[in-house]
Structure formats: structure tokens, C-alpha cells
Image (cartoon, rainbow, N blue to C red):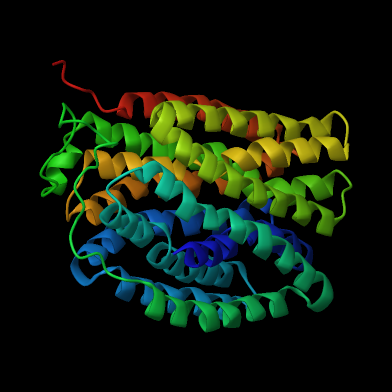
Length: 393
């Protein structure tokens, strides 16, 4: 799962690197080009409940095999993009379907079923692969683009995805024999807001905790994606070389590996809402460091951005998954988790386009980045509302 998440996430978040190359070749507006990333998030959010239901019914391995084929094929087709509509169709729809089917939903469901103890730690460890993917594939994509062009880069990544993912999923993914019950470290006894039977999606939808997690998932990409999508373009606009900017992007992936593991362990030790709040603080500080390039284009600001933003980058996903598996255990967890992921798709659908549109209108990302910081605060509040309530003895 670690390698699978690394490849899927690395390809998904390599768009900011290709974004700059597409702008230079076609001269499209930034908002319209970034809309491909927005469409991708919307498609993933729309398909998430479907993927979750399929995971529950046919098993994660079959779903992930289909996703690997779709993702690799989409990257190969992306090498032939020649218009905005083809970018939207290939990157925004087909690749998004592949990422959704091969990535965090089936992986989260598998981990929730296999591990009954210390789920936050296990989620963080597995999801740290996503940071490794960003670390490797972002700079690799930029190196290929500089040396061979963006079309060849997409082709190499697509073929490599098919060669690696298909046998990896076929041989490495095992089905969980039974749905895991909540572990002792998750909750001592069922309390208010915890769906103990896990049998009905409708029961979960009637809880405050579900909607609190839903809006936490909504706020997270609103706090992150407007920055991630445009970070390379922002650095290049301020005079930094493209390969260096892509390297900073890769460095955020390296720190993301650390952050996902650290905040996953912290979620089990100090509480998931508290851990998520600290991770949001890191994201906010990192965004402000990046915005500091408008005051003075110094490399130190980019390194500070990579450190703080990287630590928080992706840390909320494992925490949300662990909280959801605690609150809604059972065989229908895949469907419930898919419904939660709709919030992530909505937020991710708005943020990339919004950042580009703000730049097209104002010539700056300042407003978009400051609004992203505001969503860090809102997301932390949502995690607090999702905290399971315990009965007094």
C-alpha cells in the first residue's frame, strides 16, 4: 500500500510542475488551466462513494487494479494533450478516476480492517508513502520536462505506472478476512456519536461527528490546494529556477513523510483533534513563509515554507481516516469513508481554480493564500466538533 499510495499521490501532485510547462506552451489563463486540477478533485469527490461501495462489495484489490489501469493509461494519453478540453478530460476525469480507485479510499478501508490498535499511527505510516511520491515524482517530472519535454515526461510516467502498479497490486494487496472492531486504544466503550453497529450509512449521516469530519475534509484542500497548485509558478514568478522550485516542492514531500508519521503517532498519544490542530498551524505558517517572497525573494523563505508546510501537508488525511474508522466501524466503512471524501472533492475542486482566478484578476496570489490560512482555522474547529464524546461513568 505504501508504494501504491506513493505512486498515485506523486502523479496526482505532479500537476503543479506540468502546470508551468502547459502555461508556457499554450498560453492559457492560469485559472482555466488550474481548473483541470479542480475538475480532478470534483471527479474524485463524486466517485468516492462509488469506490467505497465497490470496495465493500468486490474487495479492494479488484478496485485498485482498475484504478492502476486508468491512472497509467491517463498519463500516456496526457502526452497527446493539445487543448483545454483534452486536458480536462484526461487529467481531470480519467486520471482522477484512477487515483480515486487506487489510492486512499481502498487503502484506508484495508488498514481500518486489518488493524484494531493504534490506527492513527498505522494510518500515518501507510499514508507517509504519499509524501514520498511527491518527493520523487515532482522533481523527476521537472527533470524529464527540461531534458525531453512535458509530453515525453507524461509518457514515461504513464508506462512506469502500469509496469509497477499492476503487478504490485495483484501480488501485494490482501483482502481483510473480517471487519475490525474498534480497538481498546480507540475508545473504551461506545459513547454518544459513535455508530457501534456500523451497518447503516444512513445512521452515520445522522450524526454530528460525520458532518464535522465532512467539513474538516472540505476545509483541508481549501487550506492546501490553492497553495500546492500554484507554488511552483509562484516561485518561478519571483525569479527562482524551475528545477530549484520543483526541488522545493519535492522537499515538502520529504517533510510530509515525517509529518504524516509524527502526527499519526501524536494522534494516538495526545488526541486526534489536537494533533490535527497543530498540523494546521504548520500549514498556515508555511503558507505565510511562501507569501513572504513578495516582501523579499530569498531562498530562506522557500526552505521555511518547505519545512512547515511539508510537515502539515497531508497529515489530516490519516487522522480523518482513523477518526472515521473509530466512529463508524464495520463492513460499511468503505461506503461511509467514500461519502466523507466527497467533502475533500468539493474543497479540492474550488481551491486550484480559485487561486488561478485570483491571480488572473489581481496579478498576485496574496488574497488566495491568505484565505487558505483562514481555512486552516476553520478546519481545526471542525476536528474539535468531530471529537467523540464519552459517557461519564
